[in-house]
Amino acid sequence: MLLLTGGTAVAQAQQKVWKLNSLKSTGAHKPEVWGQPEVVKTKAGKAIKFDGQDDGLLLDTNPIAGADEFTIEVELKPYAAYPENVEQRFLHIQDPSNDKRRILIELRLDDKGQWYLDLFMRTEDASLTLIDSTKTHPVNEWATIRLTYKNGQLKGYVNGVEELSGEIVYLPISSTAKTSLGTRMDKRSWFNGEIRTVRFSHQVK
Image 1 (cartoon, rainbow, N blue to C red):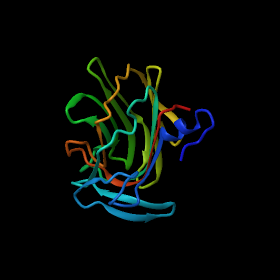
Image 2 (cartoon, rainbow, N blue to C red; image 1 turned 60 degrees about the vertical axis):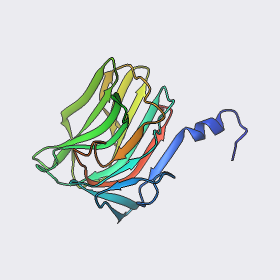
Image 3 (tube, one colour; image 1 turned 120 degrees about the vertical axis):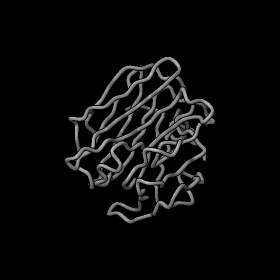
Image 4 (cartoon, one colour; image 1 turned 120 degrees about the horizontal axis):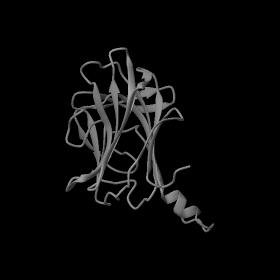
């Protein structure tokens, strides 16, 4: 359905919400399923549980294709998985034919039952890692992680609070790129926990 009000149809088309409530469809895309992730019930709806060993989803789509600025938001609950899963890369966007342009949203676990955010962006010209081990959050609790990029600034938020920021010039990742959830795309650094919703927008508010 097309909306005739100025810019509204475009704005809606550039916002995508993936509810992880099925292994058969994610955001109208059929995922390639790795391992045996499970659909589980939470107080706010269904989620997908990843075991931190070989569970993941691969989707043949790049939700931020064509965007000059964007927001990626993930609702998740990391489990207590230290020291087996210290480094966990749970969202990865990349064209498999070009390893020089990619975005990853990650977390790290410590030995105190906590986790902290880790963001990564790479282009042919630069790479940027944002991480601060002092900005910790408890495992086994739901949290919302948000990555934004606009005007050369990459930022990371947890539960609405800005925790990380840095400068890099984003070079667009192609429309033929894929998105993996629960793991890095080359099947390592597995996520141990639950993911409920992933949101993408071609805007930063």
